[in-house]
Image (cartoon, rainbow, N blue to C red; front, side, top):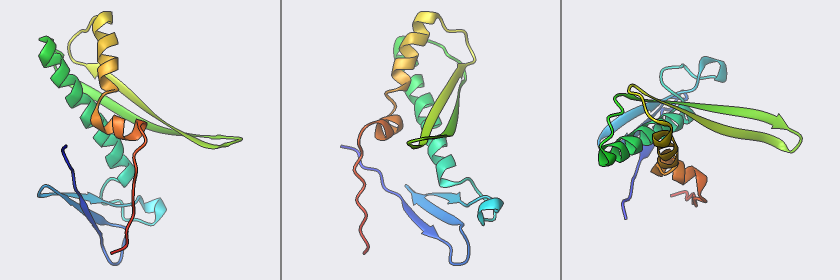
Amino acid sequence: MESATSKTVLYRDSYKAVAFSRGHEMYMDRPLEDGGNNTAPTPVEYLLSAIGGCVSMTLRVFALHKGWDLGEITVNVIQTKQLTESGIITTIVEEVSFEKQVTDKQKEKLIVMAGKCPVAQLLKKETSIKTKII
């Protein structure tokens, strides 16, 4: 099984953080209105971007396997929150578009495949998170 790791360090005097993964650096911060300096995306924005990246890559792999030329794939990922009597309901909407035309039959298959991206699967299935202070 494939394992992924990430290490995140929060700066001493702000909400700015840097995450390290496979030699890459990703910066995070909070918006000005939340006490941050707005120097980078928030962790939630990274999560939404990860979903979009994963969905588009999953669709590309599937399309190449089928011999379909989709051209550029765009995935707009939107988080919405709705206050209900039982609490806040959070919904993530993926809006997928393609540079090239796709048939209705292809759309049906592509929607199914979009739901199979590993990042979406992490969120949809029960994922255990264990926190340790070391």
